[in-house]
Length: 120
Image (cartoon, rainbow, N blue to C red; front, side, top):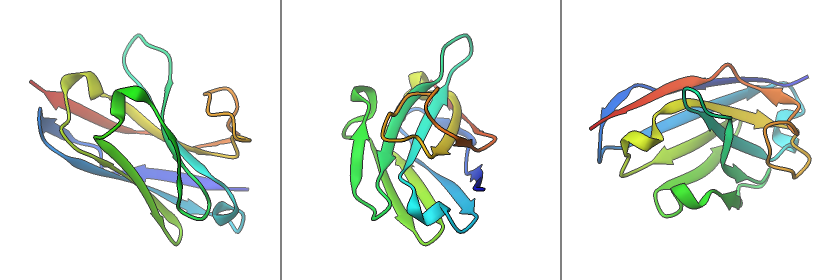
C-alpha cells in the first residue's frame, strides 16, 4: 500500500510561483513513477506532469511546459510552478502506480488533493 499526501496549495497572484509537495509513505513508494494531475471546477481531471522513480522527467502537458518542473527527494515529490495564470486554478493531486499511462483512470494511488487558486 502507498499513501500520498499533498501540501502547498494556496491563493497566489497571477505571475507568482508555488511549490507543491507530495509525500509518500509505504515501502513501495520509491519504486513508482509519480504524476501530478489537476481538476478545475466543472472539468475533468487532467494530467500535468510525471517523474520517474529515479527523478527524471517523463512527460508534461503542453499547457505547463516551460513553467512547471517536477523533482523528487527521498519520499517527497515536488511540483514547482512558475508564472501562474488563473487557468492554473484547480485542485492538484499526485498519483502513483499509473502503469506508464498518465490518465486519471490508470492510477492506483491518489492523494486527497491541494487547492491552488490563482487570482488575476
